[in-house]
Length: 306
Image (tube, rainbow, N blue to C red):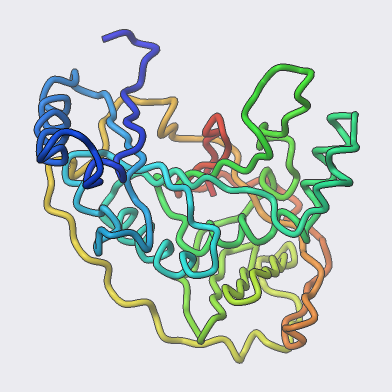
């Protein structure tokens, strides 16, 4: 049990129940092995799996695997049919104290233009544009709470010649201050909204558009015609998990540090399909305020607080 190893990651859990595998009852054999691994892990080490996945033969989205896992990496959520059920899966896991590591990608980008860029700084500037970063970030912020992580990137190859974008600390939209959440997300058809101290989040799952509206320094929102029209109903309660990892291991500063900078988000341009939503001036809180609501973003899982 090396001090610099935080735990174990299990990939491909969604494949353990595939009928085409040559060994019968493969899923049961895997589960027995996974439970043995859980039992043999030293105290304070975490066990993460690529488990949660919407719209699969598993009707529960493999949520039952969080009975032995401390959390799940989540990919394959970007198709429109997967968006709403993926929100439900993440919310269910987070509200039971599990870790969620969402794999986010740029949206609405011109790949041809991006691939022609031979300067890494230009690539970061391009992928940081509101119309490209806002949907993945807004989708994540709808359910973000303690133990929620986002990796926003265009690639994971760290070789300098690849010019891959994966350092989330270089995105102004991610490193600005967000503030405490003022409630859970609310749903109105395909539109989802959530409010933080310094930010309002609007996401349309049908059009895959998002608006991140920054508030004025006092913490009060700038004038927004749609603010009073937001729904007031809250999402239904998430299903409960009954497995062993009822709380995360303690003593992991690389996973859950007590203090770190948090974010608020720059405003995004208004999508044409949502004329009732308006962005506010990009004025930011004048002082950095350290708050007590941890969550994280980035491929390296940079931690920051509200």
